[in-house]
Length: 156
Image (cartoon, rainbow, N blue to C red; front, side):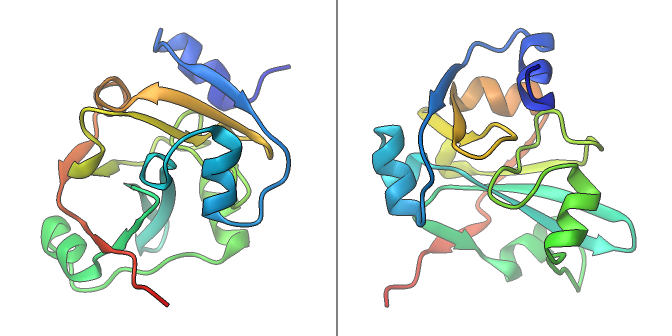
């Protein structure tokens, strides 16, 4: 039985390619396993505005959310990230598998503008499985708001 993500992709008639890979321990490992560059591994971050009010933020793998930019975009003063149990409750997916496709609630989506014009990979709702999809088509299917909401990943 396919994951809710695959069911949602099929229902949206969004062309995609499944990428099956083993367990990965880092973003770099995920990129290598998927055969893509790190920026093309999209992180789906669950953000809480308050109470039971969440949204998804899609960020390139080599970038992190800019909280000031995101707060300004959303017109709020405070945002947080739920813990693992909260993310599961809000989406129906475990961390590491989260995708806006087929989530238990269709929360709003914000996509970083750097995703446009490329093929991206993102979680498919199951460990070791990703989807490769045209970013512009995914953004349209999700009715995502596109904006500059990230900063470069800090170097260690």
